[in-house]
Image: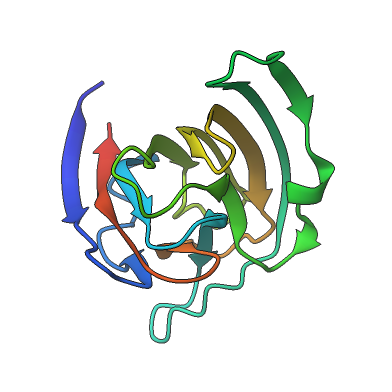
Length: 179
């Protein structure tokens, strides 16, 4: 299957990066890829939320998710693979954490990842998604996170928003349609 680049956002000192068009019935799979996502401040989370509102894009869809991560520190401590319930959402409308307590102001403190959104225009079923991210974490560690879940709506998802839990960020985020 071919990937078609639909949009590229390059936030620079921006609070968020939204994709508000081209999410429609053309494709049954949309992939968002981010590189060099670098928060302006330390210890903030890179997050995502979804909207089914085509006019005001209120990012408040009810989600149920799960979150786990693996990490290894630069000091060569014991590597960890763990489930983190605190980063789950259980029928909530808040932003889902993709990168937990990301680094900040230094050049090597950035992250990359991808999010898969399945069949967002279908009006019969809930909207499933999963994400993988790799990034520098605040404790001089390399982190990999995995998030999976669904938006509990049968309405069409029409927009996706990425932002830090606080402050601004730089980076590149691309949206692809797969078909």
